[in-house]
Image (cartoon, rainbow, N blue to C red; front, side, top):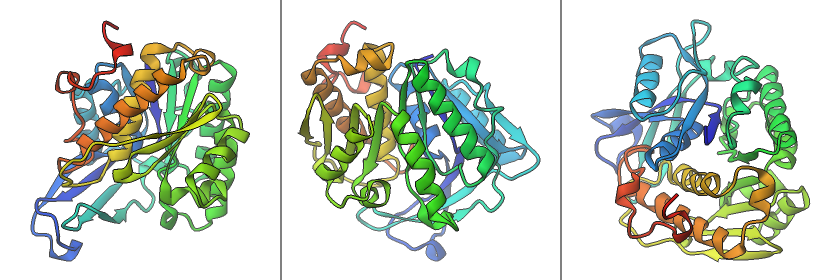
Length: 326
């Protein structure tokens, strides 16, 4: 296994036509969703071996997610179905420019029941990288399971990657979320934050300062994504600005997940462990980050987080030189 993704798997409902608020949408399109699940699909489409560890309901939406992920080539052996909660739903309203607002239907959602069952150490130890989001971690048991998983990944020399994908409105006590970030980040080899997340996650308001804060926690490859401006990364003692290509934006949903999927795909092709990541040449890391910007940008050209995730044969013109022949 290259990447095991852990956390929430949800059904995203996207409007057939953008530019309308939720109450005015006439037709909805159900799509695979949940940030970690999107990353799992992105890795698989690029040719990697990925798995999804999480919980969905024993209902038709849960079946929709399991069947959809399976069709994409994602291992769902650790995607548990339960009758204790329903599969979470998210309705996403798009402006004409592709920016989003969310209406969540996930009170008592099955995704929140993430536990030690999904955090199967023996299974996860088979992967080069473990990736997580934080939106499944409302309950203490879920937080303990995810933190334990990341501690085991760090101790086992795996590449642990955290993209919080913050949804602060979901948390009655945002301090609980900050507390779990403070435990996950020091275990992580890669932390990816969007620009509007850095102040909550790191206490810093500027990307450069946020990257330095993550480096002080021991993160060898922290990343701040900057939308149309690309990304800024820190690696090898320096910060690097990575531009993004100009694209026609239809929907920004999942662009960050596409970035993470491509970055993890590249890293797991080049590295079998965290220590190998830390020894990569700086120019190679820059090249992989530029590739990640290419993939994230292409996601914006289609409706939904998954529809725009490109396959390897669509990326021949931007495929990193360090990955050719692997």
